[in-house]
Image 1: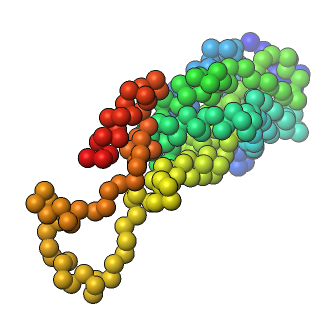
Image 2: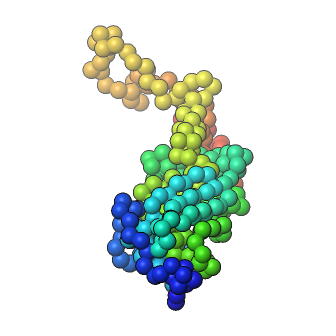
Image 3: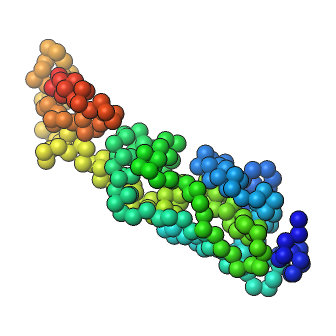
Length: 266
């Protein structure tokens, strides 16, 4: 299929040096579940022929730059004209109140929080967003390109979309940054929540006092606490520590709280 731009300017793009090239030379683009999720959405809603030409542009290095900010991606793509085309891809960036709810939901799941703090993207994070009635990955994209091609998306947009998916492979937090939360903001909030969970009533339940070795000579080599030597047990954990560190699943808090408290007392 020959597009208007192909007919008007000639089918061959101007070759560029130093463009952004896709790492994959053939087959699918995207290697992680989150980049493939993004590509799967694109391939369901976009023309397959245009996406194919976009992959070729991405592999040739025709994309000159990509800048991602909350709600918007801007890129420059070299086509067959002298001046590069300007590409803009917009999605909804969520506000502070929605992100506060997302972070609260993530913090309530110790596994999700731990994976994100370790730099991983848990697959279940989509469910966190869905439970709040919002999407992590966009269903609709507001896209513009300055080229004369009337098709949607044009090959310039398609090339940027594929390279965007590869950038998600490298840094999954870019998906969240596009929605309005940077890695630093999200991890800072989750780290604060984790720290708060270990401090109850002003007592850090995980703190270990640093006692000078000289002061421990009398008992340093003594055995630890046992049932027969309760005097060597550490002081009791702060109240509700288990509840704070391992929140019960939604809907089970009331029946499980007494058992948590008894276990903590024990």
